[in-house]
Amino acid sequence: IFISYSILYLGMLKAARALLDDCGLRVCLKRLANKNFSIDTTGHSLGAGVATVITALLMNEHRETKFPAPVKCIAYAAPASVDADLAHLLLGSVVSVVHHDDLIPRLSDANCAMLAKALLADDANYHARLTADKQSVKNHIKTLGKVNPMLHTRSDSFLDDNGISTGEENDRKPMKIVQEEHNLRLVPAGDILYLESKDATYSAFSGSYDELADDLGHIVVSSRAVDDHSMPALLSGLRAARWARHRLPVQRQPPIFATAVSADGRHFVPCYCCGSDPAWTSWTTDSDAARCAATHHCRACGQVVCAFCAPAADEIAGDGIGQKQTLPDLRISLPSFGYFEAVRVCRPCAFSAYTL
Image 1 (tube, one colour):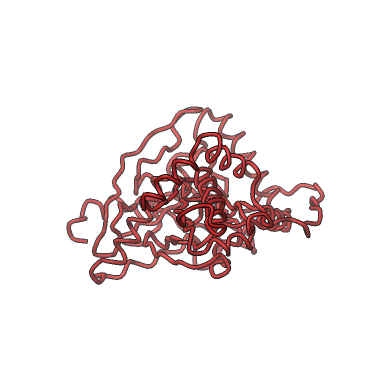
Image 2 (cartoon, helix red, strand yellow; image 1 turned 90 degrees about the vertical axis):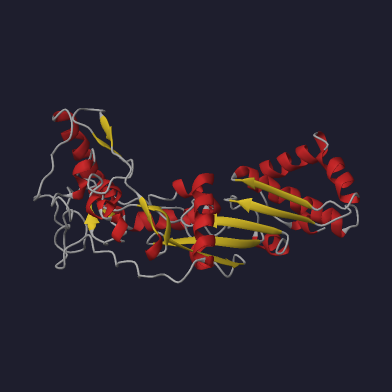
């Protein structure tokens, strides 16, 4: 009995057994299977994990001739919930759909330990950035709002020789992490459909976890890690990948994104449209994380732009503490570039969209 020797989350196993036994799902599915209905399970996030376990249990019974028909499962953004052996045994029965940087399918003990090691290896830079973030918040409070308006030059926008924002160091000793030899690596089950987004263009890759381990074997720290888990974002990615696969040849190649750091590596590039530091729209303008979130690229021209000059319904800092301003949404689709979903463009490109 293959599931008896596998490792999976106990909570999902209990939920699956409760649905099958306590709620009478097994009896209903048997009756449907005996009438030649095909049995497919599906779910999103934790629901996808439970659907995966239900499929594993019913497939186990099918192999023992206790369940009359094979069962298939499509799991959307399923957690990393089974070990590699069970994931391999479910090939052909379960399809796990993973959307780009989605955190949940990568969230295993082993991947968390790898992320912790990487963060601790960068401990000194982390504390410098944290100090800069704290000072930004203090300045925000002192000035009763944004620290700076739209600025063309900033003395604190320079980088050190390692490409790290300069910040106040402290004498705190680096933390240590315990050994993690026994950390368990759980993975999404079965065949994996991986939706990769690069410069707003989607591609779909399928294979086993081992074949896609370079993409799924670590936690991606990005602003999309949480947003990519939502069902609307996942469905948008599926539609974009389908359109990209069946579209006519791209008429024009998308522009190459301009670098956000100057050629000499000493300072950040200002917004192409207004000439201001892109981080001016953030509450904490000195924060590296805020700078990454506030710096954008126009998908039509490829230039570095701020949120105000390439608005996509962003919420930016208002003029007082806790105040915010919602910008309009000027995103458009650019089929000639292969962008079939609405993407961020700067205001000049949005106004001349009919020529793109």
